[in-house]
Length: 161
Image (cartoon, rainbow, N blue to C red; front, side):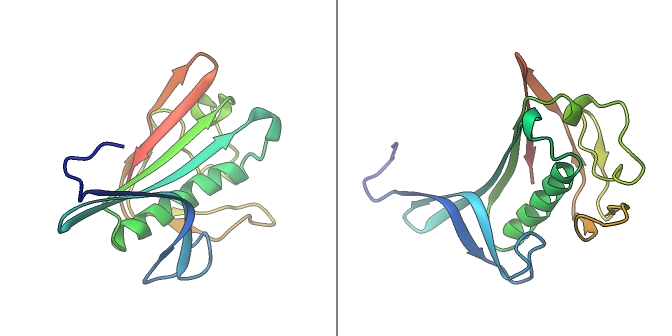
């Protein structure tokens, strides 16, 4: 732990709840669970960071539901940002190249696309068009560009909200 003064405070919570002013897509309530919450306080100033984490294993192939869950987490991070989190990140690791460099997704789930160099335009409605949809439509409040990194046989996506 690093501190500039002995009065500085660093607080870390895992799988904790954040109060929201609106209903979260993920939790369907005004209490949303965040994977990692970090608070740093130095005197009168406090900074809060919210981080959502995912690890998609090829052996647990939940495609395309995993792709939907990424956008659901981005939507929640946007809510956290509007409700007092200063810094918000989504971090995904996978051993399945399908998520970052698949040539094409099915027409039914093509909206949920975060392949390398793909983009999302603020306000675009994302719909799951299967006979039995996995979840409700999602609309995000900002633009995103998805850029992946690769280390050996693992792929990493980091998105700042």
